[in-house]
Length: 181
Image (cartoon, rainbow, N blue to C red; front, side, top):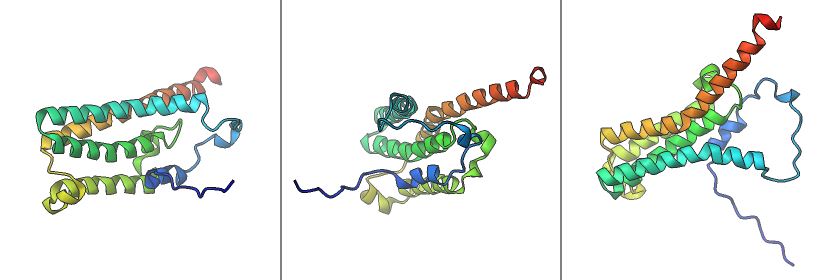
């Protein structure tokens, strides 16, 4: 039997770099090492589904609204821009398990902040320069579509931050409570 060469996997390496360049969260070294008897455990699969479904539904909403109100090219462009920005916001929200981004600060991971700014610029460029439209199959987006994309993508990812902020505040209230002393 002859061994087959490894095929390259498709993934967004830049967004993955956000996780690699992230400083370890406080208390990480005190946590027990998880047992790796399976590649994707039930808990991890549930987290992946729980975090990706709102973004996928948001992108579907962007597509359907733009298609219904405009045309196919605007719908595809708006959805692509939403995906570009949405998966970076998702990575920024998930880079720390417990500490909210509002506590860390957007610039706590300079690469993540840079990558977000770069994708915002790319989104503006591919929707503003008509000479690029044929190469990236995009078009100009009306301002109302931009507002919808930003609103929907923010809502479909910010719930993670809200949940972390609630848990963080609850934990800090308990650990810093006068009753604990």
